[in-house]
Amino acid sequence: MTTSGLGTFPATRLRRLRATSWRRRLVRETVLTADDLVQPLFVVEGTGVRDAIATLPGNHRLSIDQAIKAAQEAHDLGIPALALFPVVDAGLKDEQGREAVNPKNLLCRAVTAIKKAVPDIGLICDVALDPYTIHGHDGIFEGDDVVNDKTVEVLVKQALVLAEAGCDVVAPSDMMDGRIGAVRSALEKNGLVNTMIMSYAVKYASAFYGPFRDAVSSKATLGTKGKHTYQMDFGNSDEALREAMLDVAEGADMIMVKPGMPYLDVLAKVKANVNVPVLAYQVSGEYNMLMIAGANGAFDQAAAMREALVAFKRAGAAAIFTYAAMDVARALAGKS
Ligand code: PBG
Image 1 (tube, rainbow, N blue to C red):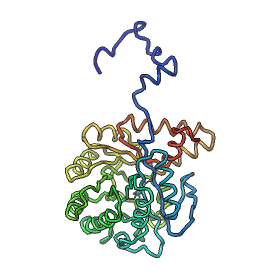
Image 2 (tube, rainbow, N blue to C red):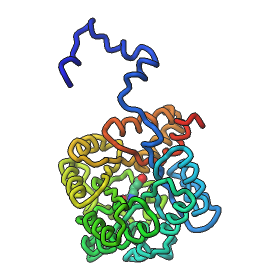
Image 3 (cartoon, rainbow, N blue to C red):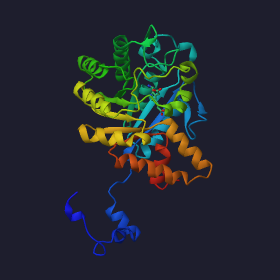
């Protein structure tokens, strides 16, 4: 800030800038648009399925035909991209998460079908094994912990089948070391040079993922063993910079900080130190809190949501993953 911003009362009365709606709109620094939003979608097997997710009000597990409809609507609302997550049948889960690398798995089929029906919406897919493993962890076990390098080998294959299916952005959310470089070189080798990598570089071991694990049914299987040996310790933020810088060096096009609202300090710090787009995830537990508190009459739910999302942008987010994306975009378009 320059010293010209410093004034003394009464020459400077900051309320002058706030006195009317037009003045506030004229000088507002941060504005939220549909372009800032990414809608997560959960896909399941079947047709005509719209299975409400109790802990994520307004969100459903959708069969591919229904996901296509949602993608069309999101596109019509001006939402640039969707984040797709599979809800995998229990019978297809195993110790190694083998279904993750099946080129005909549910997520690959969903990607191809949505891309064909709505070619202009971006598709972002998680690269991690948790929807596919019986233990609900993001990688393969050896002894009593997830083993890094063998997991990375599988993640590379998973990223490739997704990219081949038409996924625009592969998003490793597993927090293994070295996976960005490995995925980037595999994409290059296979001629998939325009497939982007959005690294969940800064992902904390967080209690706020509860409803998501419920949605993809990895919660029960995960039990009480947390993901603390690979996801970050929430006491740290210098480490977030190391994670982010390393992943940019390995070839990440974009970086994710997650969770969101309790970590806006980390988001601002990362944004100040890396020159790639930094995205944020308003994760399932945050969304749940805002929705439940709103439903309980604690506050105007839509107003609180809008305020939270603007805060993400103000802290430096290029875009925000939120389960409210379509609702917010509808409201922004005057359609709700
Ligand atoms: C899995 C994954 C998680 C989320 C996105 N990808 C959960 C986890 O790491 O256990 C959480 C998203 C949310 O809570 O909204 N790798």
